[in-house]
Amino acid sequence: MNSSILKLKFGGLALLFSAATAFAVPIDINPTNSVPANNGQATVTTWLNGLITTYNGANNPDLPSPATLSFDSNDDPAMPGYPANTGTAIAMPMGTYEYLVLKWGGGFRPGAFGAYYIGGMTGTWTFNSPNNRDLSGYRLYDAPTTPPPSVPDGGTGVMLLGAALGALGLIRRWV
Picture 1 (tube, one colour):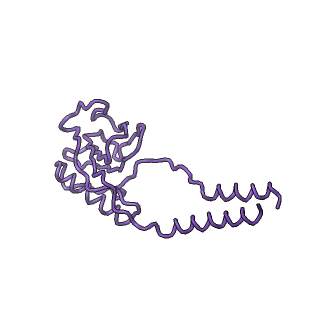
Picture 2: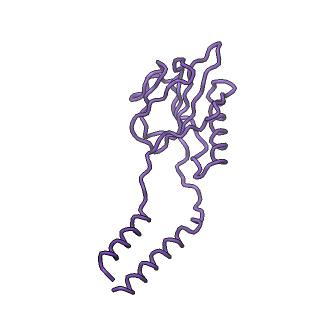
């Protein structure tokens, strides 16, 4: 067999099994724009964990849970490296926390809440107010870092093994 055809076949096989790099963006885990009963830390943490449970029930892979409060801009607005509670947009640095909860507005009128999974992200992301009100606070949450129990891969390993054995058979036949 012509060596250029063999190279083309192996190049196509390598392209078929190569992995593409995905671009990470914050995952909105509050797409229905639900609002917790109040803005208390325990209430918002319970609300966030409920959103995570709902998300994990409908999506795979699961997001880490339960979330535990690490920082509240209402308690410590001067955290180094993080912005103040001002304006209708906020640019948040990523890389340390798993979840971000934003609250815009409030007072006598209902506010709007955003909840995002930001684990493993880098860079800075800008979040805009959904109700054109100023940001009134944000909270950052951590989650357990222990990996979930392993699950059988569903046949991917068998498929790759079969492809490798098939490639070996092709090499052996023409070499």
